Image 1: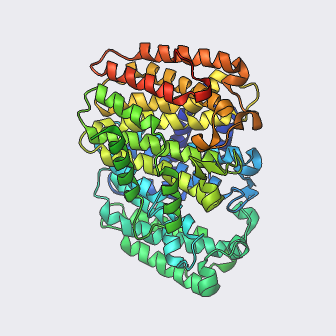
Image 2: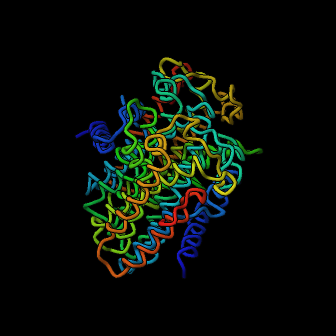
Length: 289
Length: 289
């Protein structure tokens, strides 16, 4: 089964556990709206790719880790779109959850998705229970404090923020979770996989900053120009478009160099190159990219 | 060490794991504001009491479960106080988190507390890793969907809500988590402990409804009259004050009858009677209570 099918099936299974006779219908709809139809699934595909590169001896656990990471990513988007942050009308080319279901339901949907992510890890770890605590701690660390998504988002409200730190926490953390949890799910030593996640996370953030100034809103499924509008730190503001493009190319080279020695190294290199190409706005694409 | 000291120490340890050089100072302050100084700690005390009644062979795991339940309770209060729900100015006798730190930080603090709860379970389960998955699933179920806090809160937005269902999910679920997780943390069969949690949860909700109409805002540390103001379902609206008092007394009797046979049964009965007395507004106290 290919990665996309594994991820969608794992997300379907997770969501079906959130349903039941006592589940409030609109909350379930709001949660499904946040998770389906699929986004690019960048993080769970990375997680599964690393698990495969490490032998993937318990694919159900890798599927659970990939689904948990995507559920947490979706939860963060739902909460980011709330009026007290971006107040976004659209996301992934359709109305944001808060616009479609209202802010109270969006708040609850995000909360419920966070909880569902950890329940999914616990449900899928049954064949190798000793892997559960490392997965909960790795993935928890990537979304909470002191070094996860919540921390990164909170730095936006602090004065004197350093762009690189902010990016590392806010976007980088889920990429580190993807590589480290992918290895942990397959029973491999996760430590050598951290640097790859960090570098890919930074590359993804730079690409996102570039899309925010040079991307197409319809193609992206979200409004552009948000960083300038909200005065948010951005590598484009800091380095200019050309400087940010140079930085992105360096990061892609660095990520490929950071792949630990393993049978799946070639497959990972191909994946990284094709992602980098996909994520750069067409108007900026360089022949060397 | 008494229950109160165990709980405060476990919460301190959990919160110290959320801190670190990369932690945004205001987010940490907002999280601490939500958790300290202590509330009544009703749910974690219940969790530890059940663990003790079951032998408490791994007190660190029971402490972790108690802390996780309280962190999730605090997170739910922080999110409940946001403008899209109660828009509350005060909580536990001081400014609500959203009033003190703003809505964005309150949203993030709630999210980070949810994540921290699951990390705390994983950190403390080390001596008996097989207990982790049941604890994550029990406690996750009590806060997510289809049968937890998020589900209960979402039912408020649905038409034709049945008061008993709503109460069972919104308040009852964390009491079920407290009794079931208390047993699971001590390696006991958790199933017989569910009914006690359900009955205590309903009793607590009825007492809360009574305090909302007959309590003292200063003593409670939160505004009264909120159910009527927000048109929320309440056992007082449904049964009247006397009817709700009768119902509460029946529930206390039912809870005591639901205590499973164990060495700690007498201790639990004493705890339940003293809690019931503490929670009824003084103006309504009956000589028989």
